[in-house]
Image 1 (tube, rainbow, N blue to C red):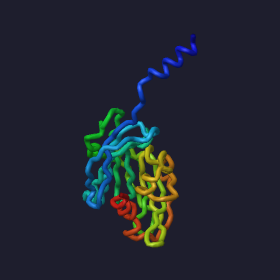
Image 2: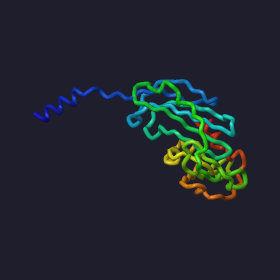
Image 3: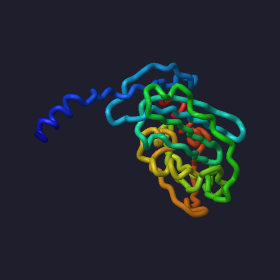
Length: 208
Protein backbone atom coordinates (compact mmCIF):
# COMPACT_ATOMS: atom_id res chain seq x y z
CA UNK A 1 0.00 0.00 0.00
CA UNK A 2 2.80 2.39 0.89
CA UNK A 3 4.59 1.55 -2.36
CA UNK A 4 1.44 2.25 -4.38
CA UNK A 5 1.03 5.61 -2.68
CA UNK A 6 4.65 6.50 -3.43
CA UNK A 7 4.21 5.65 -7.10
CA UNK A 8 1.06 7.79 -7.37
CA UNK A 9 2.84 10.63 -5.59
CA UNK A 10 5.73 10.60 -8.06
CA UNK A 11 3.40 10.45 -11.06
CA UNK A 12 1.24 13.31 -9.81
CA UNK A 13 4.12 15.60 -8.85
CA UNK A 14 4.15 18.75 -10.99
CA UNK A 15 6.90 18.87 -13.58
CA UNK A 16 9.85 20.93 -12.37
CA UNK A 17 10.55 23.76 -14.80
CA UNK A 18 13.88 25.58 -14.74
CA UNK A 19 13.90 29.14 -13.46
CA UNK A 20 13.88 31.74 -16.20
CA UNK A 21 15.78 35.01 -15.73
CA UNK A 22 16.75 38.04 -17.74
CA UNK A 23 20.32 37.97 -18.96
CA UNK A 24 22.39 40.84 -20.28
CA UNK A 25 26.15 41.09 -20.62
CA UNK A 26 27.71 44.53 -21.00
CA UNK A 27 29.25 45.73 -24.23
CA UNK A 28 32.21 48.06 -24.57
CA UNK A 29 30.14 51.02 -23.31
CA UNK A 30 28.85 49.15 -20.27
CA UNK A 31 25.31 48.86 -21.61
CA UNK A 32 23.40 45.62 -22.14
CA UNK A 33 20.14 44.39 -23.65
CA UNK A 34 17.86 41.98 -21.77
CA UNK A 35 17.18 38.51 -23.16
CA UNK A 36 15.33 35.64 -21.48
CA UNK A 37 17.37 32.62 -20.39
CA UNK A 38 16.54 29.31 -18.72
CA UNK A 39 18.82 28.72 -15.75
CA UNK A 40 20.84 25.59 -15.07
CA UNK A 41 19.58 23.50 -12.13
CA UNK A 42 22.18 24.80 -9.67
CA UNK A 43 21.67 28.48 -10.47
CA UNK A 44 18.47 29.01 -8.53
CA UNK A 45 18.31 32.80 -8.44
CA UNK A 46 18.00 35.69 -10.85
CA UNK A 47 20.52 38.43 -10.27
CA UNK A 48 21.41 41.95 -11.29
CA UNK A 49 24.93 43.22 -10.63
CA UNK A 50 26.42 46.69 -10.90
CA UNK A 51 30.15 47.46 -10.81
CA UNK A 52 31.11 51.10 -10.43
CA UNK A 53 34.71 52.35 -10.35
CA UNK A 54 36.01 55.71 -9.23
CA UNK A 55 39.30 57.59 -9.22
CA UNK A 56 39.11 60.42 -6.74
CA UNK A 57 35.66 61.89 -7.25
CA UNK A 58 35.48 60.90 -10.93
CA UNK A 59 33.50 57.88 -12.12
CA UNK A 60 35.58 55.72 -14.45
CA UNK A 61 33.04 53.00 -15.18
CA UNK A 62 29.49 52.01 -14.29
CA UNK A 63 28.79 48.57 -15.68
CA UNK A 64 25.68 46.50 -15.02
CA UNK A 65 24.76 42.96 -15.96
CA UNK A 66 22.04 40.37 -15.32
CA UNK A 67 22.07 36.59 -15.27
CA UNK A 68 21.13 33.37 -13.48
CA UNK A 69 23.27 33.24 -10.34
CA UNK A 70 24.19 31.17 -7.31
CA UNK A 71 23.32 32.51 -3.88
CA UNK A 72 26.97 33.22 -3.02
CA UNK A 73 27.31 35.42 -6.13
CA UNK A 74 24.87 37.94 -4.64
CA UNK A 75 27.53 40.05 -2.94
CA UNK A 76 27.89 43.72 -2.12
CA UNK A 77 31.08 45.42 -1.15
CA UNK A 78 34.02 47.46 -2.33
CA UNK A 79 37.77 47.37 -2.79
CA UNK A 80 39.85 50.52 -2.49
CA UNK A 81 43.45 50.66 -3.71
CA UNK A 82 43.84 54.36 -3.02
CA UNK A 83 44.23 55.44 -6.63
CA UNK A 84 40.88 53.81 -7.50
CA UNK A 85 37.88 52.37 -5.67
CA UNK A 86 35.47 49.80 -7.11
CA UNK A 87 32.03 49.15 -5.62
CA UNK A 88 29.79 46.14 -6.28
CA UNK A 89 26.05 46.17 -5.65
CA UNK A 90 23.64 43.35 -6.43
CA UNK A 91 19.96 42.46 -6.27
CA UNK A 92 18.86 38.82 -6.35
CA UNK A 93 15.45 37.13 -6.36
CA UNK A 94 13.92 33.69 -6.90
CA UNK A 95 10.79 34.16 -9.03
CA UNK A 96 10.35 34.02 -12.80
CA UNK A 97 12.02 36.94 -14.66
CA UNK A 98 12.23 38.88 -11.41
CA UNK A 99 15.51 40.66 -12.26
CA UNK A 100 13.99 43.20 -14.64
CA UNK A 101 15.39 46.15 -12.67
CA UNK A 102 19.13 46.92 -12.54
CA UNK A 103 21.10 46.65 -9.32
CA UNK A 104 20.99 49.81 -7.19
CA UNK A 105 23.51 52.60 -7.53
CA UNK A 106 26.25 52.52 -4.87
CA UNK A 107 25.50 54.61 -1.81
CA UNK A 108 27.96 57.21 -0.61
CA UNK A 109 30.38 55.85 1.99
CA UNK A 110 32.12 57.62 4.85
CA UNK A 111 35.42 56.68 6.52
CA UNK A 112 34.88 53.92 9.10
CA UNK A 113 38.02 54.36 11.19
CA UNK A 114 39.93 51.35 9.82
CA UNK A 115 43.28 52.04 8.16
CA UNK A 116 45.41 50.01 5.75
CA UNK A 117 48.54 50.48 3.66
CA UNK A 118 48.23 51.34 -0.02
CA UNK A 119 50.75 51.82 -2.83
CA UNK A 120 51.47 55.30 -4.17
CA UNK A 121 53.69 54.34 -7.11
CA UNK A 122 57.05 53.43 -5.56
CA UNK A 123 56.22 52.52 -1.96
CA UNK A 124 53.35 50.65 -0.31
CA UNK A 125 53.61 52.49 2.98
CA UNK A 126 51.00 55.21 2.42
CA UNK A 127 48.01 55.31 4.78
CA UNK A 128 44.54 54.69 3.38
CA UNK A 129 41.34 55.37 5.33
CA UNK A 130 38.80 52.62 4.68
CA UNK A 131 35.17 53.54 4.03
CA UNK A 132 31.73 51.96 4.20
CA UNK A 133 31.89 48.25 5.01
CA UNK A 134 35.58 47.86 4.10
CA UNK A 135 36.65 45.96 7.23
CA UNK A 136 39.70 44.11 5.85
CA UNK A 137 43.10 45.11 4.49
CA UNK A 138 44.00 43.52 1.16
CA UNK A 139 47.08 42.74 -0.93
CA UNK A 140 46.80 41.61 -4.55
CA UNK A 141 49.04 41.06 -7.56
CA UNK A 142 48.10 42.49 -10.95
CA UNK A 143 49.72 41.55 -14.25
CA UNK A 144 49.71 43.91 -17.24
CA UNK A 145 51.99 43.87 -20.28
CA UNK A 146 53.99 40.99 -18.82
CA UNK A 147 54.86 42.93 -15.66
CA UNK A 148 53.54 42.26 -12.16
CA UNK A 149 52.74 44.78 -9.49
CA UNK A 150 51.53 44.58 -5.91
CA UNK A 151 48.48 46.57 -4.88
CA UNK A 152 47.32 47.17 -1.33
CA UNK A 153 44.28 48.77 0.19
CA UNK A 154 40.94 48.20 1.89
CA UNK A 155 38.26 45.64 1.04
CA UNK A 156 34.89 44.39 2.27
CA UNK A 157 34.62 41.01 4.01
CA UNK A 158 32.30 39.60 1.33
CA UNK A 159 34.84 40.28 -1.42
CA UNK A 160 37.64 38.77 0.62
CA UNK A 161 35.60 35.62 1.26
CA UNK A 162 34.93 35.16 -2.48
CA UNK A 163 38.47 35.58 -3.79
CA UNK A 164 38.31 32.22 -5.63
CA UNK A 165 35.44 33.50 -7.78
CA UNK A 166 36.65 34.21 -11.34
CA UNK A 167 34.75 37.49 -11.52
CA UNK A 168 36.25 38.73 -8.25
CA UNK A 169 39.73 37.78 -9.48
CA UNK A 170 39.15 39.70 -12.71
CA UNK A 171 38.06 42.70 -10.68
CA UNK A 172 40.75 42.70 -7.98
CA UNK A 173 43.75 40.73 -9.24
CA UNK A 174 45.55 37.50 -8.43
CA UNK A 175 47.31 36.14 -5.34
CA UNK A 176 44.78 37.92 -3.15
CA UNK A 177 45.26 37.93 0.62
CA UNK A 178 43.08 39.67 3.19
CA UNK A 179 43.59 40.32 6.89
CA UNK A 180 41.94 42.13 9.78
CA UNK A 181 43.55 44.80 11.91
CA UNK A 182 44.93 48.23 11.10
CA UNK A 183 47.94 48.13 8.72
CA UNK A 184 47.99 44.31 8.73
CA UNK A 185 48.82 44.28 4.96
CA UNK A 186 52.47 45.17 5.71
CA UNK A 187 54.28 47.96 3.89
CA UNK A 188 56.68 47.13 1.01
CA UNK A 189 58.28 48.75 -1.99
CA UNK A 190 56.97 48.37 -5.53
CA UNK A 191 57.74 49.54 -9.05
CA UNK A 192 54.08 49.79 -10.01
CA UNK A 193 53.13 52.36 -12.60
CA UNK A 194 49.73 53.93 -13.09
CA UNK A 195 48.78 51.47 -15.85
CA UNK A 196 49.38 48.49 -13.58
CA UNK A 197 47.43 50.04 -10.74
CA UNK A 198 44.35 50.57 -12.90
CA UNK A 199 44.68 47.24 -14.76
CA UNK A 200 41.76 45.68 -12.87
CA UNK A 201 39.55 48.54 -14.00
CA UNK A 202 40.57 47.96 -17.62
CA UNK A 203 39.80 44.24 -17.41
CA UNK A 204 36.54 45.06 -15.64
CA UNK A 205 35.23 47.14 -18.54
CA UNK A 206 36.37 44.49 -21.02
CA UNK A 207 35.29 41.32 -19.16
CA UNK A 208 32.43 40.68 -21.56
